[in-house]
Length: 418
Image 1: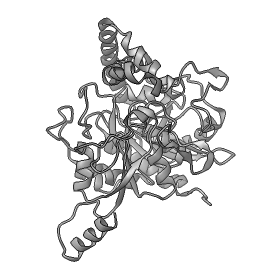
Image 2 (image 1 turned 180 degrees about the horizontal axis):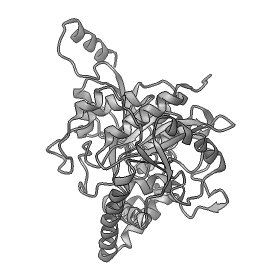
Image 3 (image 1 turned 180 degrees about the vertical axis):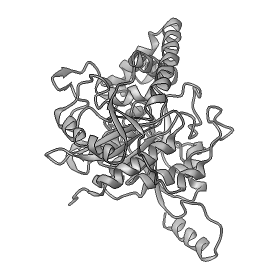
Image 4 (image 1 turned 60 degrees about the horizontal axis):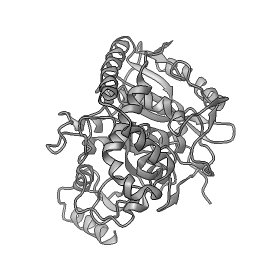
């Protein structure tokens, strides 16, 4: 690392052309292949695996000038939004070291909050960028599907998993996105874009912009502490000039779509590991893979049809409402000693995904969504708010999140670390 830093200094002294992230220390998520570092995926099965090639994103970030210093911890196989595994242990929340840092990009979220990294990348299937941002009082954007390359990926057109930026401010997230976004021939699912637009100032007038306010997405159980924090922020959007109305998009079928296609994906990508390595996999991973094994072709076809209908309903809803505002997580950071919350506001959670519906239902829309700090519970735990934009309007999402951030300033409160 020091040698790379010396080389970066030398290039500056020679006035060489350098990338936008030149000299910044960077750690890649442990689901991304990066030459020179293990790629464990948070599993003992892969604890000694050393990739021979960078992923497209890692290659792009290196080319932009980052100095690679390591990897960030993940939940096992990226499953679940609590970062713990048998390789590196549990990632704790810098605001309360007894609490979860979220996941699966929990290592990145905690490192940013603690000041260990200036920027970080992550990935998001059911909330793995947004949830750790929410828990760690930082910012993370789940981009529109197809904005940032994910290659190599086994099922490139499934589209539910995206790569995205994380940072301590919206402007830094946008700046990192300008280096991450853009088409690559190795990822056929990525569409052409103009990444440079994300590096420009994010100021915008939101007068008379219509916003749908639905913190619980129409009836999801929501911890009273989260609900109390978010309720205080409705006025912030109104003060920005927005027309804030109670309105809920019709997300009927989102659960079936997300759960079926997620399970099917894991059965095809991780199913071959079950026969030989079942005992080395957490019970939730085994359950998830076997859920996919039991799906029929008709089940997948139904899920895909429902998905198309869902996206059309969301598009029509957003013709009236440019943005949707809702909770990121239905709970504040929970005890790191448990694997997942068993109930929310008196409602029992049936499995390890149940408590993540406020994030994964938005995933199913394929719309861009950001988590931005929105306040703290009475006991000092971070709570974020989720801003959801129109399909491919990532810039608009960043602009509204930036305006909210500037109006509130909650992201400036850093953890006290002894």
